[in-house]
Length: 121
Image (cartoon, rainbow, N blue to C red; front, side, top):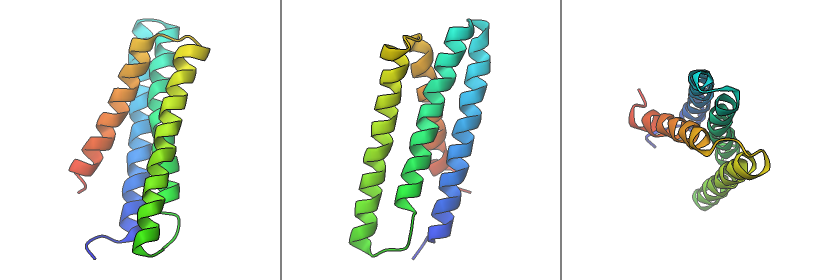
């Protein structure tokens, strides 16, 4: 085994915390455009961080066999996408916040997700 379950948990926690930090930074940067844009950008990033955290809890919950671990990973990924799509829907349609800012926060948080797996060290 190349990677332990604890290493996966640590990577997932670090990724979610970095996504929260990036969401906050994007929100602060969008304060220059206005309050609604800042809230929209931060909410887009926080949605991704919440999805990542929920996926991590589901995928790394307990030690199980191979097929069950794969099923937990798939269920976690579906949960993550449901949170992200649902959160984006709330941001755009229920609260009618600016879409460009929300998508920018979402993309910035996903960039952290991709970078975390690229540079594990």
